Image (cartoon, rainbow, N blue to C red):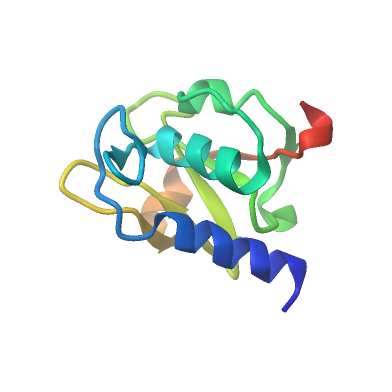
Length: 130
């Protein structure tokens, strides 16, 4: 298994099926989008990120859609505000995120029309860049 595939599997297993909860930041209490990202990066990589999608969008280096690798953050405008939603790219055109109240953390296609229309950008975060 490639390192990229192993990372994607780890990211998925850490969070799938956990309930969405506004302000949530743990599997026990639930996650919002930025809480999920902060939790995964802390547990999987030992990297501390803020619990805020907009603030997370300022970390790392910008990457294009064609450059995405597993572990990159993908940002969306879902509340008529830039960088209001964040997920983690898994590879193969999929990302994991905590979508909304009443839903659970799940995997989506990055190429779905809903997400493509709202895409704000992507960032690659590595410990050496912090």
